[in-house]
Length: 229
Image 1 (cartoon, rainbow, N blue to C red):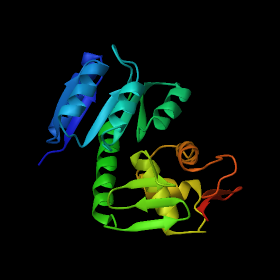
Image 2: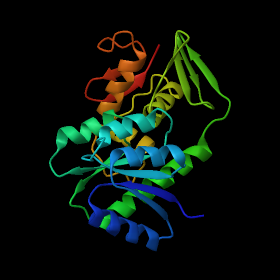
Image 3: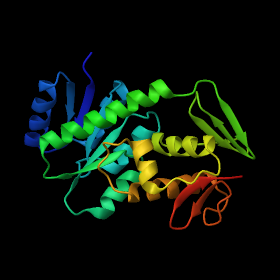
């Protein structure tokens, strides 16, 4: 079965090029040309990955990404104009898994998508089933991929959950940002270590009472991050 990809971009030539290239690799490609249409398609059908442009008519990419995250963990790769550093980081904060800057090489896009999908498939196979971990107020349900604090469910993105799960299962072990990038995002991930910092910050905002004085996810200055309670 070919992988199902949704491409959301209002530049028809770019979409055509991506579609042609991915179909060469037996992927099934659906296309949307504005944010509303993209969101509707993501709701109607299950995809293996979504390529999502940042600047879209009707609803921008960040908003689409945020809304998709409310019902799906599908990997999302943002397409951003070169040099929009803030936008890249914002995209990750909204739950995107990666970003690619335009203009891009279609072979790079293909390699990146395959790496992410391979990583997602491995993650699904390696997932510990039925494990419930309780640490203080924090409850981690590995099978349902849910987290609650003091009985209140916290909505984490797929990557935030992956980071937290790794740290919880290896308490007091300090992971460098490079280490986390390799384990959670995969060795092929060409992104930058700030990706890790953004996810840790978001994670703390969601699970810590006071994110600047964390109770669970701690920083060892100059080394990395670790879980402790």
